Length: 463
Image (cartoon, rainbow, N blue to C red; front, side):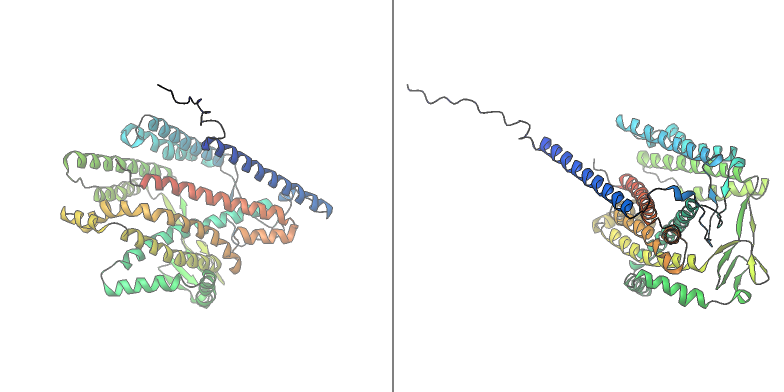
């Protein structure tokens, strides 16, 4: 019987260049190297062009006297003494909890499964920094900005003002946006149409025009100082801004704060106990009302026994203006109102879309189990809607933070406005613009990191 031709085995297919994963690594390394080389060449060319025009490039000017004033200047905490110890304790606690979470994850478990580890995490993140702050409170040093301060101090004041408007704006826009988003889903005709009008009007008018509206059409038309609108001396409104009582901690503030953190730890344990009982028996253990009672009762009892942890200084009319209290300038108030209402309209649509993304069968199944509307929203709708809400909500927080740079239009001294003044005074445009970009990039990355972590915790995990 004649045998067929014999073939030699071909070369193996898993050689280096035939492996797509290995090729991909090589291509990425080459592209990354090209980007680094282009960045280096651009940097060198920029320095050479600046040197040819006699423009020096350094950050030594940050120590020079600024020579211009800033109306709204928060105290600058100096990174030594109590502030340095507090930051170190907070960083140590966060790093320790992160490593603890990674160690538990390597064993297929989480920190939340162990009560002692939950208490340890709370102690590391909350109790340790507060204890360090209390122990080193007398060593905290701050700097008050004046015209004789340095450019570096001026830019720090700009950063603090940016954070002041961004943090407060994100909180207010979130609360208002969630309320309006729920109102848009209301079956009440009037509530639904008012919420729809709020969203459609505010999100379709440019943000800059809204800031101008609040500044020129609302706040600048308010009564003068002597005809101020007052409410029990707690809220004073005039064309120079908004005045509120100023809080001042007493000797019992730290004790009350420790008790409050203890209450928070107790509420966490109560919630874990309720979840465990529900999983084992199906019985619902009350959590909300006992938690509310603890939050109000324990600090209130400490207030009654020890005395008030905080005293207030109220604004008083002296001459032609008010003295004392917290003064929110018209520039700050107009920027805050504009950012809050504009962003809340965007968040309202995100909330409405996230809730409507929950399948109708989930609503019907929950109602068939006898859940009331609160339990339906708390245990069924909200956990599923969050996975749709959180990613676009992150974008809104980032947009609000970056849109705070529009404060320059109403002379609010945020980072861009302070940086522009510093550029005109020092002539160091490249350095100041670079620092401004780095600050905004850092803040945005921190917001993204926090929201991505929360998104990972809130997403549904398939079993």
